[in-house]
Length: 505
Image (tube, rainbow, N blue to C red):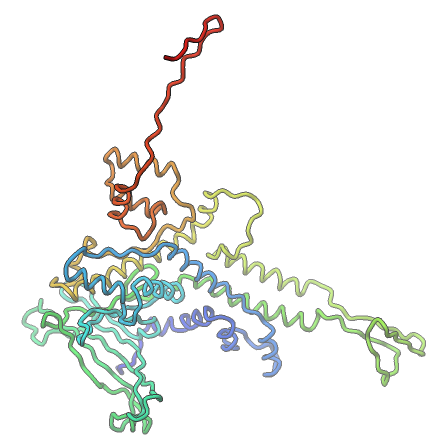
């Protein structure tokens, strides 16, 4: 099996991924695909098909929906639980500030990841170690199209990744004296879990190994010969990463998906909206095509001289000497075009039902907040699943970074009490009500919850600023001068009509 072999699930889903990429990219990408998304009508030549395609308008409801979903998830910043002190805490803090050694913070890295999951439903992260000057762990994001092959096996009583093949592009100058013309070389990074050489110990650790394959010519592996001869995949480098002087027992790669972090390919979250969106595009093309030929009234005459020149305008009259000469306008009458209008309206409503409530026409009558939240429960459930799934996979990434800087045997030994990533799961636009605030304070005063829990709930309810820690809030409470509590005054007792009121002494 060649190194560039692809997984069967990859082959089954690559067309769906490309279709999603084209739709989210917008009108230019969809129209560039030509007959892939807009079939040619019968007897249309190239010129007629080009005009037919250019008249159509692509209403990108899918991209608008995806942007809305990402905005709802990041309405509140993600939170990352890290150790408070020590060398591992410093390393994780550095990682949160720069996750990929390109200046991307972990929050920005997470936002790109969420966008990728909502768009195509899959992504991956390699957690590697920079063994040069910086000596730190960092992450590398891979799109779903770049993860071409993978394999899992049962190793020491658990299912683990034993193979991941990643597609990359390596850029090198064509000549040493001309660094402004880099050449792009196709490259495959093969992550392998190699079994122990000795089979005597069944519990022996497997070792992690990295192979670099490049698509080069048959000649020597130099910049001067890369463009000559027939090219083929060649193994150019083999690396065995070490941690504490020993090979890694697992592959430091994490899959991300909308429902789980397993290697299996999951369905694209907006797949149904994508299909309806393309159907709407085809209907719009037929509608504009019909309008082009029927919507403009066309003048016609009968009994006029064929060589005469007739002009249309308020200052021009048509006069014919032949008896029975007549003139008129050809205009379209019927239900043909309105059928396309109704079909496009149904598609737009169907996209709204499938998840994009922001495209639905707003009601002009009053609607309670509870009714709006109930109506949007379907969208919230999708977002909640995506948010929880990515929170779990990002926690795995943090475990790997922690593990690179610690002495635990495997990353799974690092529990949520040490590192934890949490994305927003509250998509309601209303904050905490006064009754809820009063109930929380009463629960804290009764000893049912801790002060830290109360402050965390206040922060999630948008009562406390998101960037303010519990310690900072407690210090503010201690230094703040609050007005004295109001004193309740008991009113005097009412007197009867015959009794004179007594003066208050």
